Length: 112
Length: 112
Image 1 (spheres, chains in turn red, cyan):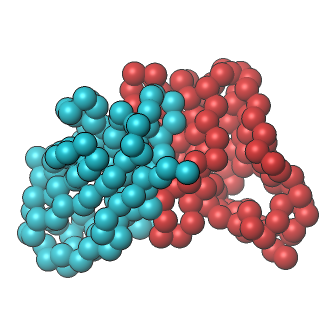
Image 2 (cartoon, each protein chain N blue to C red):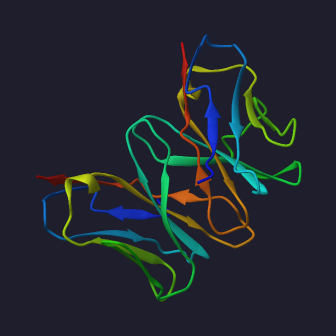
Image 3 (cartoon, helix red, strand yellow):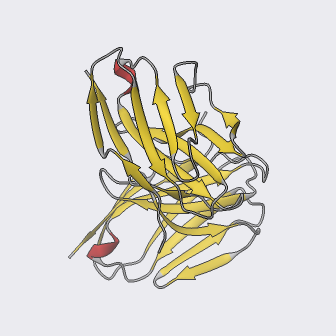
């Protein structure tokens, strides 16, 4: 059973367009993290969200945690080729359960 | 900015041999983790470690695996008798508290 479902699996857009990546679950998470992973490298943290309804911005990236803490989204405004990469969401079910459950990732390609 | 480091970056071994993967977590972090990622698959939790003992482990982390913090800076993962299916990227991560985990660059293990 997939604890965290990411969609779409692949996304290819033109430079300057906007995109949204989704991370959904039927389970409630105490926190959710977004990472970006380059081929052959480790996940690099982008953001952590912990409060239902929370919105965090990181330059052109906007992250939202659902009110019920079951889902999250990543929105990129005016995408650039440098945004190309694999975006992973990872959630922690309980605050005393330190393991992260990862989604399968969304591969984003931004064409110049 | 402090980061998690891992050595070696690549390890090739024969089936049945023992390997030790090394990690230096971020210095003021208290919680340490190992994850693995088989090629083309999701990142999977292996084990978490706190206060010199395992706090949680997954079903993957069987008797062939062990972890140790031999001194104040290193955190190791030992695989006693490697199998072909142990071939994967192994990521170390650390966190100060329960919210946010920071990942190292990984060790690519190939078992022949």
